[in-house]
Length: 166
Image 1 (cartoon, rainbow, N blue to C red):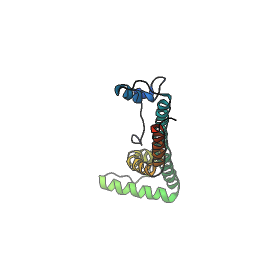
Image 2: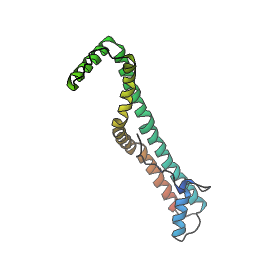
Image 3: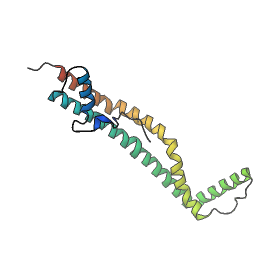
Image 4: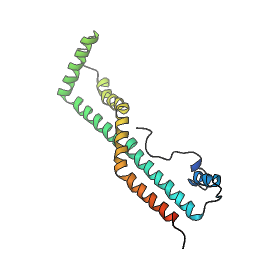
């Protein structure tokens, strides 16, 4: 799975000693304020950290954990099915039916290297099929769990920043 997520990406904001503050600082300079105060700098770092956390969680779920589990289980199931006599018989019957449709004689037993490659081919064929649905599910999951918490924390931080100093 690729893309999506609420990530921050790369770019100029992630380069240099000021890290994620470059975009915030640039906006403040354009607004005529000048330099960031220490509190604004810390707040910008926290907001950048929250965005990074969202991105890392999204990537781990949508690009690593869920697709890895689905593909692993599919390959395992296919390998197990093909190692049983009933699975091989079903595969041979399917190959024979396909052979009749395309006009080829596939009645011979399939060679071992083809049988061994089929689970891997299944795993590879699943990748483009499962990407978009997994991305959508992970977006909905994070929209209902992690992102509201991060948003609440960010708003709380912004409210604290807007309070006048004693």
